[in-house]
Image (cartoon, rainbow, N blue to C red; front, side, top):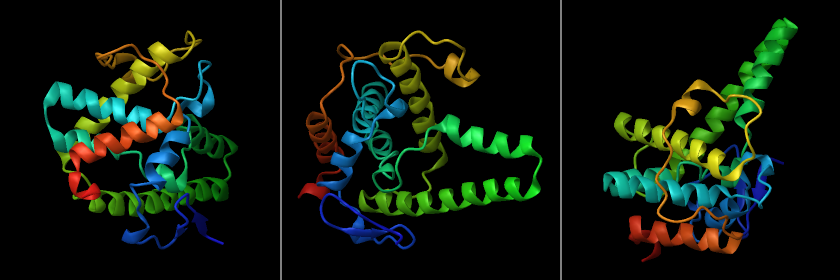
Length: 210
């Protein structure tokens, strides 16, 4: 069994997803609103991927006035609707563990897993961006902008949502400037996060809700 059942009742084959599988009405907003960032380690409550996506899109719009950049950020994690959110430290730990064991077959297996994961994720990214009328891969300037704001959002979220850090994070995160928030940083309940995601998508890609 290589398919998942989504909230809208679709059967999405992870090995062969199709454009009609991509649903921005129910599946993507509601799944992202229930997926917690930081593997749930926010003591004030689950902080969702949907809220992260909305706040980052709002920040890009305020600071650049580029709707295509805001839309690119809004959907940059949308593939997690179908493949879930694997913490970056776990991905890094897998590779390091395989290298430390000095077992070629494990290192090779880790590389294969990384490559196959990227291929599956890229297929979903392609379909998601096609659905909202954007090319994939993103043009280099948009890719850099989304990555920059993703790092800035991460630094901002760490500052306002997590406890005091017991160790430094990566250099690029430590160097990232914080996002200027338009209001107090509070965690939204999942129905609000889903609705805010739909609202931004309706503004940035109105044809989806026409």
